[in-house]
Image 1 (cartoon, rainbow, N blue to C red):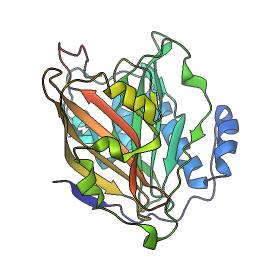
Image 2: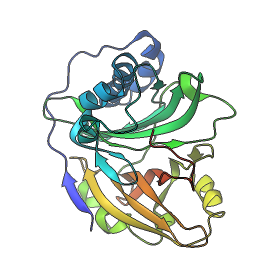
Image 3: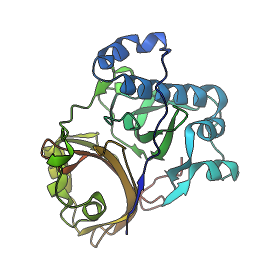
Image 4: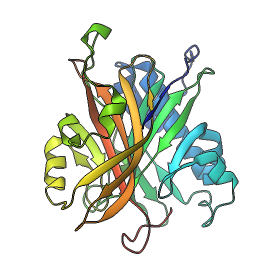
Length: 293
């Protein structure tokens, strides 16, 4: 059963925001819609800078929440994983970099998500996408609570330097408009396709990032075998309009596969929960060719 964890109230929003030169144009675009989203995007960029200068271990310990999780064929506590001197060791400084190019934030400004390309610096080109869910704590700082990415096909345009685009989601304007089953009941529903937002985005391995409901329909038309989702945990914004879930999934024969998934949800204009971002990555091993990095 999914455990529903409400997020802690956040403190006063910082009055000043430092934005690096390369972010001026994209931040100016999103600032008009949500100062909290500008702040979240800059937190993601600062996380990436820390990784480039100090290395993965230092960056993960600084920017993940105490309860934040990453995935190693199942969710693991990110800080504990990094402190445990894992094998293979965390990447050294400058090994990879990333940029947020799409995301959203709750009305309360306490929960949001970002996604974008990851560039392996030795190759000089993006080879995967990340998906990170962030929570704003009582001290006003954003911290990562969920991080799951996937290798994708970016053989065409490399989106690494694309400007950030805010998600355009229509949310319920009042509590009276909110209806239907609870989020915990929806996450493991057998007909998850019925919950896709028309503008849903997401990641599946070795294909371009999916954009729009039709892209998901076409992808799953090629998947043979019944898919079952097993929710593990969830978090909901204080404004009750944005949420995340994560867990495990299985695909029955003949496609026989197990893996991790993570989702971002928002309430639509009728107050119904819809999936706006969905990532699924199979377990590592010879069958998939995936590594732990």
